[in-house]
Image 1: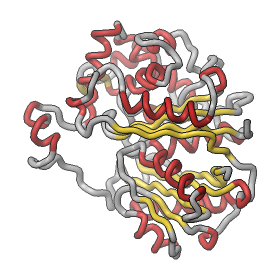
Image 2 (image 1 turned 90 degrees about the vertical axis):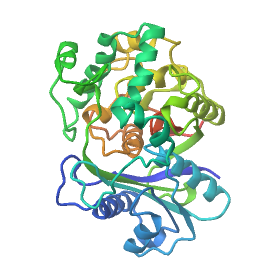
Image 3 (image 1 turned 30 degrees about the horizontal axis):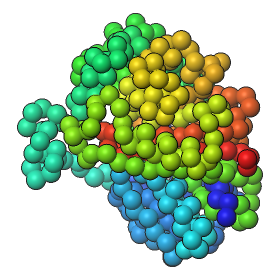
Image 4 (image 1 turned 180 degrees about the vertical axis):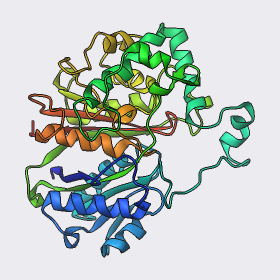
Length: 375
């Protein structure tokens, strides 16, 4: 059975939305995705989401009585996991059409949960007492080790933010659109060495939703799921096998490439979760698009920028477009737009797009291979 994304849409706005509750963001995204798919809630028999509200609450609010639910919560990559799980459920006959929703009041914190590392948690025992608290200080461990071992420079790290701002400059919905230079990035406030403010993701409100079904039930030109993979490494960053590479990135990518039966040369467009500037560097290397230690120069040479040979994070990414806290949904949305020819910064001739999601601090990963045609 051929599984497709038949509907994809974000909330009406992303950015600062203090008038929207978390539930409202879920429902607005769901409404828009259903309309995009040409479907109604009565066509849905599967619901997936992560966090609070969970899939039961979202289904109830929409008036859906599902026969299949998925509340897998593994950080910002969760929505890629949901697509993979939905495809498996549809192929197994457990459901026919799945609605995957995301809504997060990351900036305004309307109805958002409080996050804390309890003393009984792994982070609370083995990281927090040593000052490793929150993403900026957790991710520094990996970034600094990568810089030391591969020669990645501060300037090359800054080039990631510069390249993605070039895409955001073309996207009217992006939160930050003004072009920036390496000098601008390095002059921005230091948040946690080596990360400057412009190398850290945004904090925004927003949401998105997807409708996943079989090709036979799709009511508009579908986006085909050719392959996928998922993996995980360690719940805390200090226990990674190697700070300079993500095992979960590698494993999920290998599985997706194998299932889709593609090579790197087949990929026209790439979305890599970019909570911080070094994550796309890891993604390019761990997926095998460049060799170890080569991603910094690859980005600095313009290969991922507009006009480059491997367009990357073409909505502006979490660094310039939006980042609600769990960004993976927005990466999928941009891949769908590019494959449909509907993106604000449209890349000519996109037929195959790959999406790599990160969950937590390199804790989990999932990879999707999407296309607007079957092989």
